[in-house]
Length: 258
Image (cartoon, rainbow, N blue to C red; front, side, top):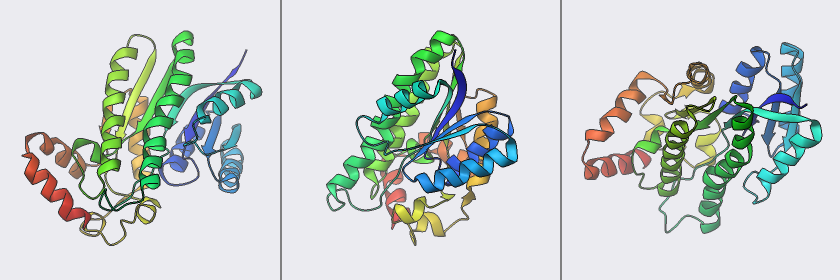
């Protein structure tokens, strides 16, 4: 008999760390995955003390092709199974596609798409077999439109949203819920890593806090809501994209990324 846990990727800060707090507050044991062992252990120790839950840390690079296998092996070794999977790990980069480093962009695909898909494929069959489970995939408002100057990132998040919607339909009668979370620009370390500091996208309007995004995401997950866009303005903007001509969308994004 194995014990259920919530497994959260990209849990060393930002939205991932804040989501870990919500699950821990609800008494859920956790497995936290990210590259930084030191950051993970500090977060884990704080959650153990505050919420009296079991928190395991798994430091690894999820972009590696064997990452999903290493995660499942670690769970088996500890006598655990993933009742909930939160695919939060990901990164972006601003710049023209032909000028950004090729390895950096391909690595983005490896983490944002390949790792998310491989880990989901590795863990979902067990959820189906047990007739109980949940997935939360962190997409973005970028999923609703193409993104000049961040072409690969926007496309990767469109994949996450499309994949989540299809999976939710496939699993709706199997006891497994799927929630795609689409935050707008959020105050985390993402902007610096993505070279977005100073871009109009993050300077023209206030950034939502990661704590607020995590709170909205967790409530939507608990309600088994298939898709949630965080924040009223983000919801309005995402909805309007369906009626906006492509040339206007492309020009708008290009302007905001500058």
